[in-house]
Amino acid sequence: MGENTIENTPLFQVRAERRVSAAPAAVYAVVSDLPRSGEWSPECQGGEWISGAPGEVGSVFRGENLRSEEVVSWAPVVRGTWHTHAEVVAAEPARTFRWAMQDSRGRAQQSVWGFDVEPDGEGSVLVHHFEMASATEGIRGITAEMDDVEKKQFFTDWGVKLEQDLGVTLERIKLVIEKN
Image 1 (tube, rainbow, N blue to C red):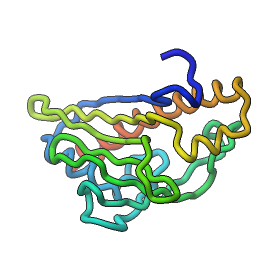
Image 2 (tube, rainbow, N blue to C red):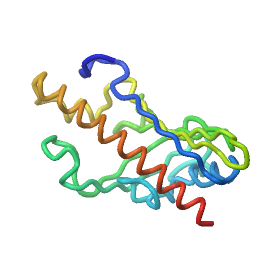
Image 3 (tube, helix red, strand yellow):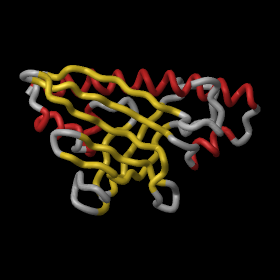
């Protein structure tokens, strides 16, 4: 994709997949239950639905997140506990579930997380993906004081962090689903 800068589109585009020993409907039921995300997410500790019916398009989820000092330690990112709001933008049972992060005014940004579930014999393939099509309010704030070299390093380091997080998330989801 070339060098990452704040002008690049997309800024981030990552995906990972794992086979899970459960039918697509069962996998979807777990991954679309965002309040449970604390069971598998490296940052999201869970949260609650604050508007709309849980898991339906247009519903909003308020997530509680926790980030340690070690995560891309040199960058001016939020540390400790903070909250986000996310709007469900796709909800097709047994197939796909996606949510977009909202800005401070409650508008969906081009920062979309999601899961796709594909049948695979007796089980499923679970794909976890994230795309930031343009700079979010948060990214603009993080990079505002950075020079071009620092921005390039930030996008590289944060991209690695995202890839690792997706893999960890899928491994944890697989364990949650397969232990039942």
